Image 1 (cartoon, one colour):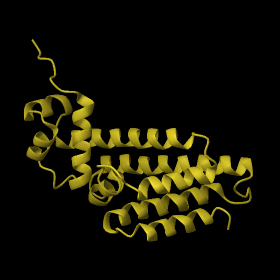
Image 2 (cartoon, rainbow, N blue to C red; image 1 turned 90 degrees about the vertical axis):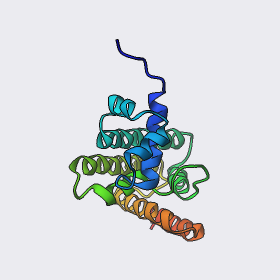
Image 3 (cartoon, rainbow, N blue to C red; image 1 turned 180 degrees about the horizontal axis):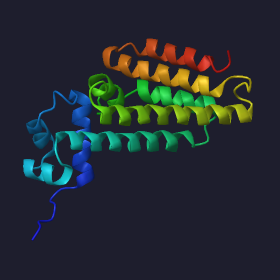
Image 4 (cartoon, rainbow, N blue to C red; image 1 turned 30 degrees about the horizontal axis):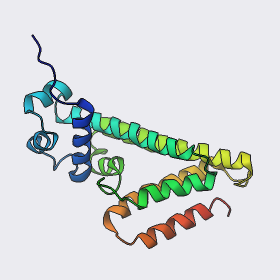
Length: 192
């Protein structure tokens, strides 16, 4: 007879995600996970598999959460430039208990060269972010807010690259003024 789980799977997965985000994969031990998640080691293995499987599940959860957050906010009647500004501000103005930076950027720089599964997931996440930007830019072009003669794919790639760089800088810099200036220049490129 199997025992019922005495914890909310999504809740403990979120706890693991935040721990990996803060410490990285290599520096997070199984004991760290068990303690932080508030579950027994056996429950961790039974529910999520090994440490790597748990990590992959946290990356998948992060992608769903990130995409849902951005899409929900972007469709709130914002113009294209307002939506892009929102994305930059969301990244720069972290006012909650989230770790700084981006779990995908952290994971890609730590593991992608030697872990094909992490490389695939993080690349997919970066590509999804670029697609969101492309959709926003194309809507801005249709509305006349962004010049139609601009290469929307190139602009989306440029903005995504800038956002990835800012995700690194957010972890190392407290100079938000500088980060907002970078965002301002990046958004101005939509008209240049």
